[in-house]
Image 1 (cartoon, helix red, strand yellow):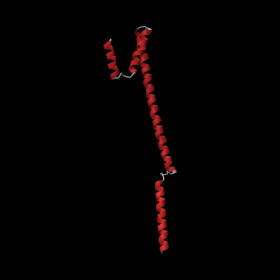
Image 2 (cartoon, rainbow, N blue to C red):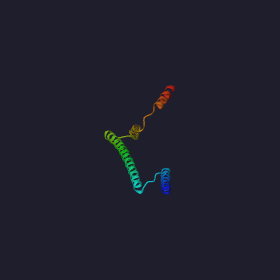
Image 3 (tube, one colour):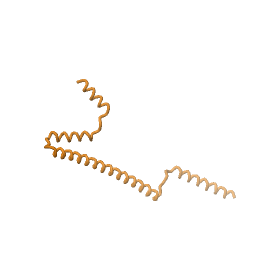
Image 4 (cartoon, one colour):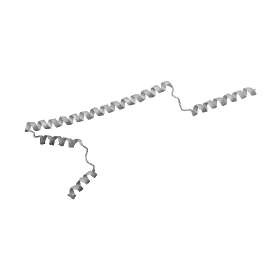
Length: 118
């Protein structure tokens, strides 16, 4: 009877030690869950690539539209009269100004102050 009790106590202690060891180890993933994680990650990567490709395509379209507008303006001016090279540059420079970013308030203040000083 005592031997049986000791065996049960040993078995309980061994189980507790095994559970403690399992808890101390980092979680292990089985093969199936690894595949799920990898496929989710690859889908995320594919979605990101698709989004970036769409953005690049939109940028290209905007650039092409800008070039088409510039060409249209030049053609309209040519139809009205013959264009001198200087007026051609004026059209190009006016289109460049539309695509650049606006100046910040600090740079405007600096520009205004430099105009006041002269």
